[in-house]
Image (cartoon, rainbow, N blue to C red; front, side, top):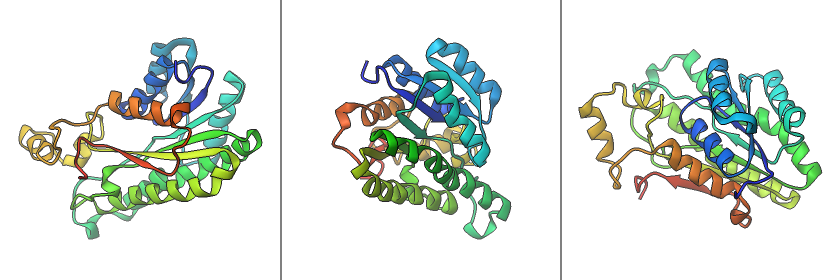
Length: 248
């Protein structure tokens, strides 16, 4: 029960890594706002996890939705201790000059601007209570970029730098800011990174991961739980690789 009594928001929590983080947090004693633009998916996770969870439909690229999401934590559970910025998206492998402008804008909105909007809502509250943890889900793509995923790589590099900058600025207020760098995982986004989900393409991807498997929602949930718990009270500004050795 490492998160007993804590209240958390997890964005993009209707599936994949976000769902895995929400599951782990509830198992460790937290109350969790499951936020996702997929209302049906958020409701499914809500029903599965019971009273410790509350599903909220939120498009985290929109300031009004972010504000409502944060207020839901206070109205439903009476506060907020942890914010997990997990929502994100990629693009199909392609030459960098061929990505459509509207796709580029959407990637930057979800992978970059959403973290800014959430910080504007949450940081003043965390400063007032002199504590809080912000966990940003970045990617190994921000450390060791794969070809033909240029703009996704760049957006996740921004997340890592933002995490470090936020950590330095917010440490005097008792706020820790950390990140996770997962490798490609068994989530709905896997096909996006590979372009096509075939045994041959999976084998090609797995050949770059020394441990020999993709990351799982459980892997990310376990790492997130540690970083957001008091066990990591001296850890801030790190981007922990959960990648089976890919970035070595």
